[in-house]
Image 1 (cartoon, rainbow, N blue to C red):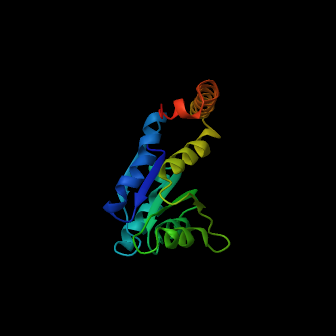
Image 2: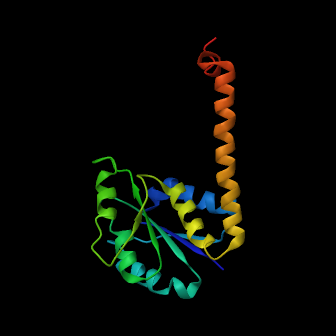
Length: 170
């Protein structure tokens, strides 16, 4: 059963949103991924959000650029947690998307990631699922420990070799 829904307003968002899917794949978390435009297919959005829970979805990741109404409109149609990913735009660099997602009215919250922050959206979705799934929680703990170990190894190497050698400037 799919646990996470990944939606985006356009196929041009797919290169960014695939990063959420890639993280969920690494964690072994089932998901579905599709295009749902808040403006061009409002009935599709309504049906997607209204039926998500009965389809087994526990968390929705919604990526959108520009006006970026998809995350907020999705959150208005379901009580499931919605994670918004603002997509970088040519006109305003994604700041328009970010502001559209974070400026939700009281009662309709959307968790907002950084511009193009789909990987973090996948991690956040896994964290939400990990509250009630110890296997996912354990995988996330291991993932975070690996991040810490990587930083420790890099710090040790830098301290041992010095900056020039570390950067290959010799």
